[in-house]
Image 1: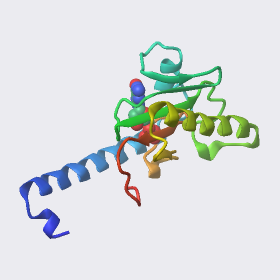
Image 2 (image 1 turned 180 degrees about the horizontal axis):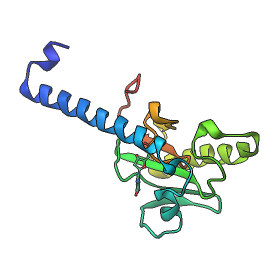
Image 3 (image 1 turned 30 degrees about the vertical axis):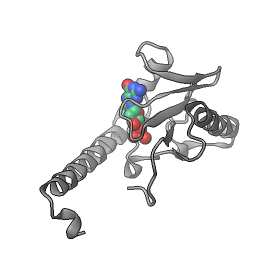
Length: 152
Ligand code: DGP
């Protein structure tokens, strides 16, 4: 670690990383504590096409579009068109089992479409501690670069 911090660029990168993480956490906590957890979210406007997005896949139940703040060369969000109580995975009930399975299957279709089947990651951030910022269930499909483990 000491060696990694010897260059000024390493230190700047490290400080930037810490600052970004703190901002993300603060934003996630604010989002979780606001009416956004119950009311409409930005994703409703994306579903209605009021806000444009780069759509990768769509069917009658699911929409997949590119994340506005990509964390990998391929970063696609897969969401149910009908939120139906699924503000986050932790709110899932038996009645949601079918759509949950479909979302996961669509994540695989997206990976195929994007040509990242050699390795991709599917992430669900659940709640403020996991930095969830939009309270409409969504799967992140990430790929196109070497992933690291454990994630931050
Ligand atoms: P999460 O932190 O897991 O709640 O992820 C929410 C993601 O939503 C985040 O990676 C950025 C993305 N996002 C937020 N607003 C928009 C938007 O207006 N358009 C698109 N394409 N993505 C958005």
